[in-house]
View 1 (cartoon, rainbow, N blue to C red):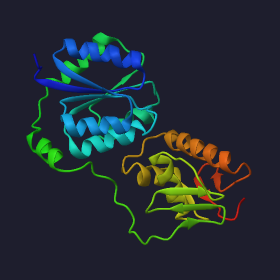
View 2: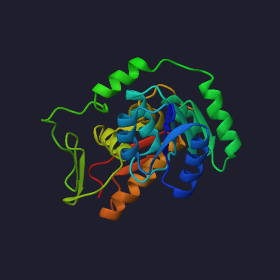
View 3: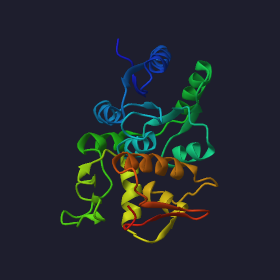
View 4: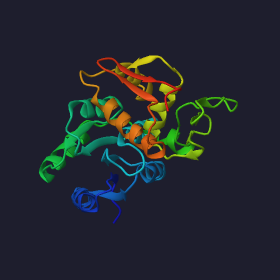
Length: 250
């Protein structure tokens, strides 16, 4: 028999995903498991679920970005289920549209109670469901097609194509890493405060006490740039303030 409600479990850890799936199945949901962020977005568009449980650490798209894109097309309940314990992760997750945040490891009884609590606060999804069925997943506005490449001789960023070349070779960046680099490269020689990066890249006016999430993504970005050009020093840390892109540093 088909259940009245549908849930999407977004989790790349198979064991955790299976456990959550079984719990939700017993609670009366038809459950679909998605192992990647891109799969999750496809499933949400197709299934129009009532509930999404969302891990933030996914192999392709950062879970915060997945949450944001789900919110563009669906008013479903979203519970973040993540191993990230920092306050900034919880605050940003809730700011971009999650209804609740549950830290791993967690009790199945607690998850069950939180799901039940959410569904005691019903909201009308009809208009959102119709709009989601008719429209593709919205994306952040892209620059016009004639946008000139940015960067310097050894690092080229193509905003319209969302490509980054280091010494002529394309490197693979996450969406957040690309947007961070694009914002810095667009302001060469200018010190960009962490708070400004948080507002620009995460598209939020809410700035928590800690901006550690910016440092984490910048560290990953730098590691990838160094993997392609070991001696590069394009991104400088300005202690106590933020970051600066120096196009002449090699």
